[in-house]
Length: 165
Image (cartoon, rainbow, N blue to C red; front, side):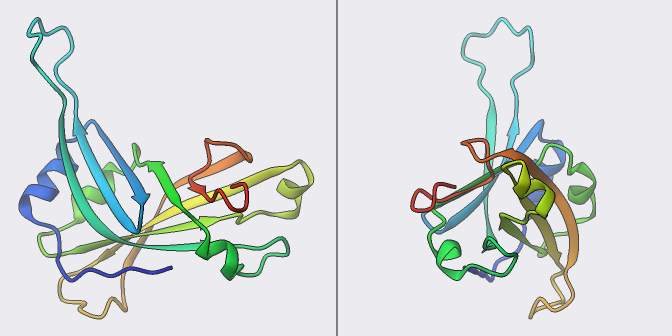
């Protein structure tokens, strides 16, 4: 599954990403939303103070690997939701410019034989920064963003109810 949007990041989007306390991504019903969250100051006595949140719709792609390492197209098509915390990607937000596009690439079951032997799975998410001048996205800057290695449970990044992911 692959999506593409024509709009790039605004100055407000970039400011939100650079100043956020938390950044996470959620894919649900075919929409990938990058959320930058700024927490209210700790110790504030104001009962009405709230966290601030800035949502950015970005491009995404999904890929699920089969039991023997090849692409499993049925499994890829059955993915219902993805989630990942991008808490250690501050450096990426420092290089983006207004007009750049972001694309998040999720991969599921990117396992080695050793992980399969112990019943673990590996999911990952990669961030692509596509410069404004690169209109067809042929030369993106790619960065590893997050990995999950562990048991097949609800902590996974990539989920599909049809296949028990």
